[in-house]
Image (cartoon, rainbow, N blue to C red; front, side, top):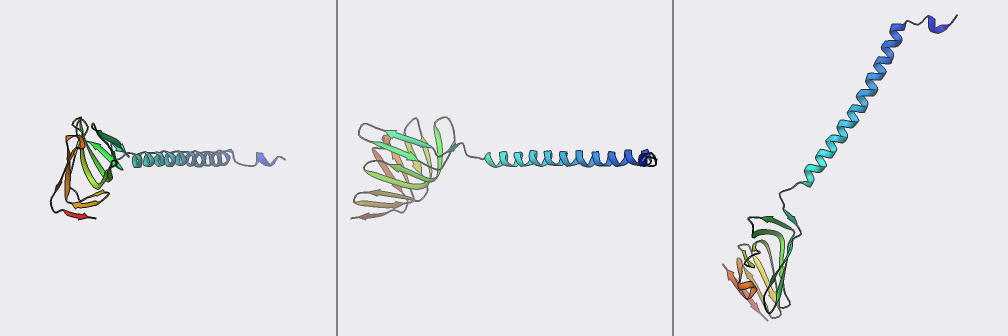
Length: 149
């Protein structure tokens, strides 16, 4: 006689149903974990930074001052807050600081953070600065230390 005829059909149906449910739940678990990972990755990419590694320039009749930073945020249509390793560089000098508000329309910049100005024979440590008149005038704020060589 055939062995399959002796097995209860209800038991076989229950075993196949359990295997199907386990297989289906395994697939769903994998799909949800992949979806969750993709959400976590997209959340880490979204940050409060509007511009990564912004680059600008202040142009006037005699020189060009290049501005670079690690992060930037738009404050309004014309003003941008630059943060982390902000550097102003021209052929004559460089200024390094951590936080600057740059006005693209007026081509001015202002910082209230500790700053380091370097030129060929001069180094200035200050508590802030203001670049005015498209880079023709730089005013240093607060406690300042000037080193002349």
